[in-house]
Length: 309
Image (cartoon, rainbow, N blue to C red):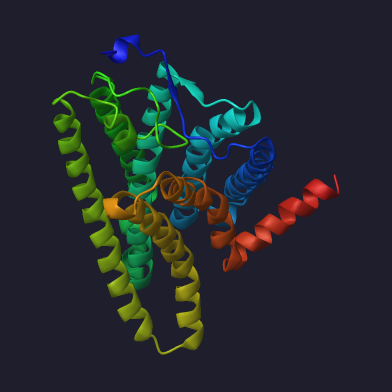
């Protein structure tokens, strides 16, 4: 039986079999990828260049844009290259690197979304304490904690997953390397160690999700008690984009990983993976800029400067 040391490459799941569909998928994903880079790049530039956006909310949004660019750049370019060149291969080392960055960026992003819900909670429920609770140093520490937790998560899962012998072939039933699909290729009882780490990780994610839900319960209670309609509108404009991003990210990922095995199929798994790994980084900039007047004004200025210079 071949083990992990004798596997030099793995085969990723293809989006289509016919050449016409492959080229169609390539064009579609290229458009999505460029839109994600442009949208997140504009947010990065806007927050960095406009001093009015140097606040905790936009600081965390800048970090989210960086993570989104990393997430989509980890999965989509390799999938597009394989589609264009009609191949499914990824090297063993490339697969390990891809899994590392996916675990790193996804964990860091969800941690950051949790921190952003706390930012919204303090801004609306404890506005008088906002400056003291979310000062420059506190924001930097929270962002560093999000990135650091993602890095430690990635080291743990990558080391556990790729220490297992692979003896169930080399075909990965996904368009990128993810932990559950790699575990399916293992025939060692040692995979239970990684399953245990995954259960612990899911518990932490669930804890973050509960924190987000409780934060928004308090936020909506505070908003509904506001006497001013203008105040309510401003509060909802601050919170609804973040809530939409969290809902999109969490709902698709939860359904992908917690759906009953009876309804599982390669095509459904592929579609769900696209929904939670490709769509959020592309639409997050649109969601955040749609109801944010300050960000829209800065983006318009940037676009005009680019056009007329």
